[in-house]
Image 1 (tube, rainbow, N blue to C red):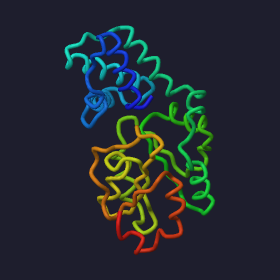
Image 2 (tube, helix red, strand yellow):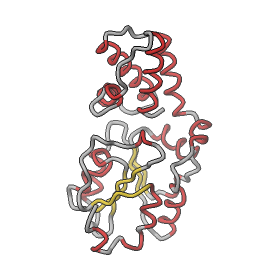
Image 3 (tube, rainbow, N blue to C red):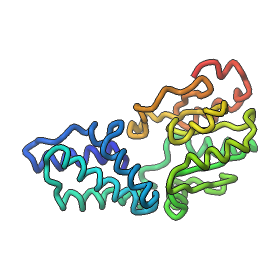
Image 4 (cartoon, helix red, strand yellow):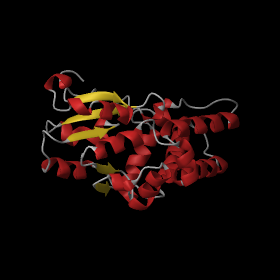
Length: 236
């Protein structure tokens, strides 16, 4: 259950209880919306462990209702929590599937001797089963770092010890995945997925000149032979 899906579920449930009246979903899932604020606050309190996402969705729903002058409903909270917990169900994850080209791109890069380092928000007991349910072998990664309270410190640590000519950062969020590397002059790929708009982060600043925007991880693999080509990095 991504933020976009959560917003739609809540809007439909609230509208059904209030004669079609519900606040705009952008106030829930938009930039600095209730979901964004609730999950950031909760991550600082308890970390992004297994209960983090279901609790964050419910907290955001309560705040959203309070702001709109609508009474939060227990049955909606229970339904939201149950739906949000589906993100941990291997059957649901497997059916959802990895984003197009992900497995092939990782295998391509690993097969050419690239050292792959995974940094992810969350705990190992949640994220490893997700990888396995998606059919991605965790052994493809030379290092894996699980960061329940935020990734920036880990990225800064990795950037401090990396070779700027041979290290590239890949992520779908400049703020969350790439900034510590890009700020130090490293190059990177900002991944966009048109198939799943909920992954987009429209409130983020535009990429820097040392960052290429690509469609999925397949775009990273397709650019492999040009990584050291200075003309390739001329424009984002």
